[in-house]
Length: 449
Ligand SMILES: [Zn+2]
Image (cartoon, rainbow, N blue to C red; front, side, top):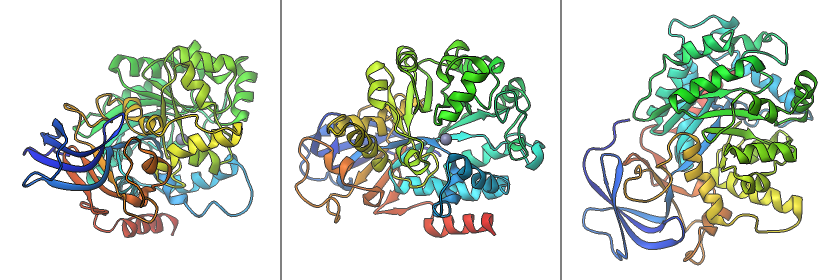
């Protein structure tokens, strides 16, 4: 993505300025960044791009596995668990090539842009050809994802994932050979070949304590530490993982990560569902973030993680669509609050502003972009506009809060998405991928044929 070089003015009918909704805001944008924010601008200045509705900072999808999108709608029949779902997921993973993955991810990231998402954290572990043979370019699959994000006009943080074992002391199974580099040193050597670009950051991930042997966790953590790169890890999504970890190491997954230097302010635990009070204290005390994926967690019958307690302990919250059962960050945001309401039978655990912060600024920070997620001078010109005149959002225009956007709007209400000053979605249509539904259908059909 080349940021637009020319100066441009956007006039926002309403804008979310971190604490309140402001009517009539002009944003000056140059070289992909916001250079001025003017409030009290009642009418669009001449030549300005007019964004009607409520403009928010671009949303951050902090946890994605792009290829899971191919499963949508096909894994809802019958009973089962996370583990039976995983078998179906592996059958899709078995068929992907760099070409077909690029095709699919381009369409999935275009769907994200249509949902107001300006940056994705791609938790990427599908590294090698079937059987585990490296491609001629050992990062062909990761490069396909970086290119797909550019083609869809969004930012990506490629969280290149170490996935080395099937379980504690178990070699990778036949499906997982594609994921494994053999050991953490080989993982690090491959990752070190990846280059950052204007639209792409490189980060690291530990798939889970199941998939990276304890004595290799520090190698991954050091790689991220040396680069000051984000480090993500699936953590305690399932009680079975906790049980196996206790059996193998006599401690919880969180404690194991803490003991091997994985926790810290650039680290994000994904799911953080089944935790002890001590785990919560370790995560919060170390400043480790928490990425909740409520639509996936409910889809996979994972459980409800202690997000309120984690945040109170010091863990910043972000949100991800993970398995892409749906791609709608507004739904993820309200689902976090609504899950808590069901669990506690009380309301009001987070304000709409706090939920929006998780869906934007704190999500971008978890992806290594701490200056994003705000409509302020110097921030990247990444924003999205929610229609306030749809069947879902019509009514009084919000004066104080973002409640309509967070509690009533859906991805279908996203009217515009601008990334680095480039209009990626205009009036609900993607400007770079002409027919996103068709692109999705074509890419998924090719995999399932
Ligand atoms: Zn995941």
